[in-house]
Length: 472
Image (cartoon, rainbow, N blue to C red; front, side):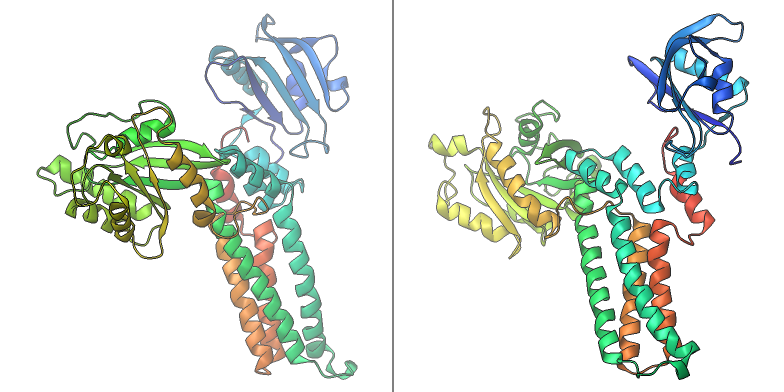
């Protein structure tokens, strides 16, 4: 099938000024030339040139005015001849162009098949290919920047450096297995064990960085938790800048979770407004409260919303119990009512009330306390600033842009490499058989190699690219 010429839309369907249809394979130039009429033929065009002309329908009449870009092998994304046809957008013209190219002999591409061909033709390794998917799916500026680093080879270069160290270690051990009489000095097991330990420690730190980078890649989940009628929905609307959630004076308006995203310092923060924590009286209310509990359990950052003008009560404590152990911002909403003298007593209108709110969050998880007025212009900016300050805590100590995008597959392989290096270190310190130590070092190399695609199973490759979009 690698000898097929494939075709797919490279832009999303729908109304747009321009749509791009991509061809790749040995007959890409022939197929495009059969439907293109211009001053120059794609067959005669040098690589990386754009031709202006018409795309012809089957009866030879012009279907659309197009720009045709030529990329000749091996200097193309896939390493094969590629033609990209830029036409007007919409539903009709791009579909008609695709159908005509299929009639000429092109095969509709599978999801991710262009990038798969780039991998198989040595244009990208597997870690870079996975970064392509991360770049396409990125929903924030930071996630995009990190994915570009992976596509540029940051992860691959680090793996290559570690692999070079492992090759040196493995050669030193295997020389004692294959040519023991030719090796003059005995092997310094303690020194080699120390080197194995350093590599294992480096890989452990690396995996920690990758785990911390999930928030950069996937976004930070922030749940607004609190009893009914404290202003959670109003705060969500104030943060996103429009009326995303229904707001009413009647307690219990929110029956389901409402989600929307904002971007803070280039990070996507996925806000979830939840039903008020309370003892529900009917089935619908119970479902809403249960969904609030689930949102609290899976969130990366909790925003405990409190009524600044009311005393702390049992319902507030029940809400706080849902977020035990989570990094928490306490948002004292309705601060305007407290300022105007509205006070339900029990110190809620002063510092004592704030201190009691701090105690509601599990010890060691309180990030900040802020006052908000959700119904006032700019009244949620203190909460936005607190979320910004909380991001380094939520993302961990290694949330910088040097973290390459990762996947569950990569994390599992890194964990395997760490375990193999730990076994090699223990074996060297215990003066174990050189064969066992060599086997452990080889296992570590194998795991790291699979991250970049060396020796990876074909089914794994197919599964990775099946998750790509059509045309990429």
